[in-house]
Length: 262
Image 1 (cartoon, rainbow, N blue to C red):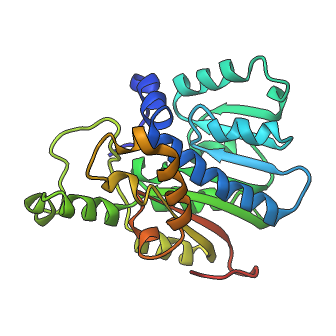
Image 2: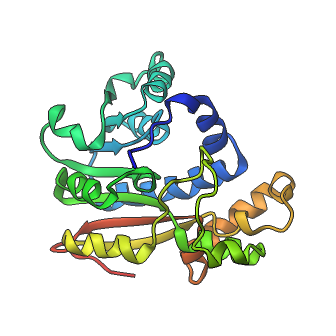
């Protein structure tokens, strides 16, 4: 297995992940968590690393607030889109775009970061734990990590309630390559174990899309989006819903800092 590169389907990735109702929910939920991170860090200007950030949706929003952002990705096509979108923006110089893998960051940057973003990346990697540990080396002692990954437990629950019992019994094997379906979904318990070994603690856990993907009517969100979004935001940090999000978002700090594990 090798790390996945979205170059062949860059525009499809942008349309499906960010241009849909489910993408809009993801953007709203994660942005709220990033705003909370910025409030907690409480600095006028942050140095931010968006590792595997694609075309930099959040990088651009953070740069617009005046923060200094390094955006890296292995997809040259997605980074081209980022550069095009930034070209006429007054904050374009706040973003440094790097065409490189997370594992090769030491060839391009120096120093530490106040905030590190790693969203929907680990589940596409050949060695997610090693990559995560290497990424954490770039974090300031008092910094925060915004980590989001595809939740394998939610994948299993979705298939159970959909009646795909044989598929679950077989361990949910990948029968065919679905190009936007993660190659390596992760169990939350495994990620927490990796963080513990790296001396990191979780401040907050949030489920991303705790309701949308379980709706019986596929077009429900199209006609009731604002109501659905409000409910997503209301329940995304309450159990059992938080653990059933299609993605799990964790806000992380070093264990030596004051942290409250969920």
